[in-house]
Image 1 (cartoon, rainbow, N blue to C red):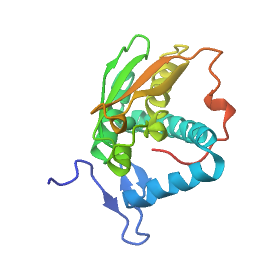
Image 2 (image 1 turned 45 degrees about the vertical axis):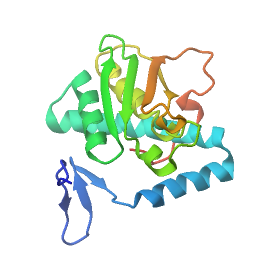
Image 3 (image 1 turned 90 degrees about the horizontal axis):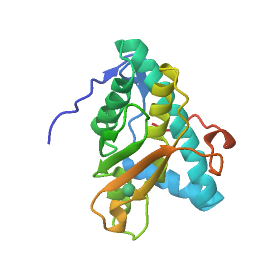
Image 4 (image 1 turned 45 degrees about the horizontal axis):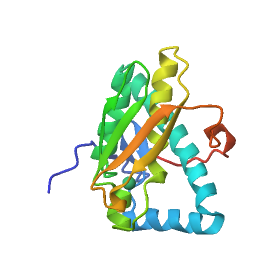
Length: 191
Ligand SMILES: [Zn+2]
């Protein structure tokens, strides 16, 4: 085992944890996964996943905006830094090298997904909670370059199905897509 790759600062007065200039919460994985299961059971998988997608998409955009300003990063480098930080914060090992910087589309590979680690082999895809993160970050990249990217993320293979790796496909969103993130209520949650 190794020490965390991210710097963690703790305010001695408030106890607030901070990484990369953002307040963080450090919670047991079983707590978060149990919370997500509770919401899915209560409102149904389709509705829950749509809300999680929208929340993750918005959180990723906010994260990229904050880090670009803090570090002076721009363009696709911000997306790759986001993939790095997700990997360093315990969500699994994200590889965004399959994304085309000219279009924002392509494949994100995820090894050792925290969602699969919690669920085990189920025969189903279990990483819907994180499918809005890459397209959210890429939406920020596109907007920062005055490009009209309308992107959609979907997990097309999951290690929980027995594939050994998870794969999130980012494609151009079409008007026929029924899960536009603007259609869902925005929640102050996500990564
Ligand atoms: Zn998966």
